[in-house]
Image 1: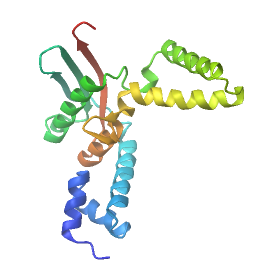
Image 2: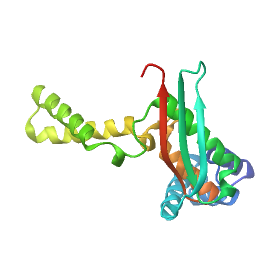
Image 3: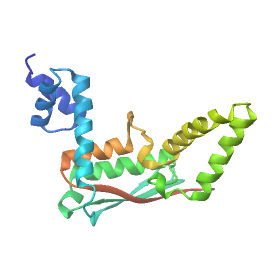
Image 4: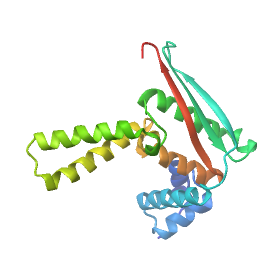
Length: 197
């Protein structure tokens, strides 16, 4: 199939990947737009994993105050260089993450940061629910594992579905930015304030 410049432009608009990467992905997938998007997302993940070990000592503290001033967020997003910290795509990402935190109220950046006490309490609740509903013990473990995965995806920032595009998780969004910018980027920490909470 002939790859047209219009196809490359459409894929670039959807993924923010470079022109050559878009053309290569379309060629590999014989012009299939959806497969090309998936391929670029996988490559973004590979790029992100390669860069993950690098220090992120630069970055921004991005605030977000919701209309009415009753909800506010501050998030620290790190990168490798001061140059990237001033990059428009990086700053926009930090703003989006701050706004996402305000809307979705995660309790931790990654699941490893959630206290053992809370994880244990949630697990105990799910075990009790499964047993009380009469499920056989050999099935309870699978049910609890599934419910814990759902719990982590709802309360962990990196696993939450991004509020502006629920097809992507925050981690997917981060991977795409790392692939586009070519530098390790990390969401280090955040704090969320809400009046009366």
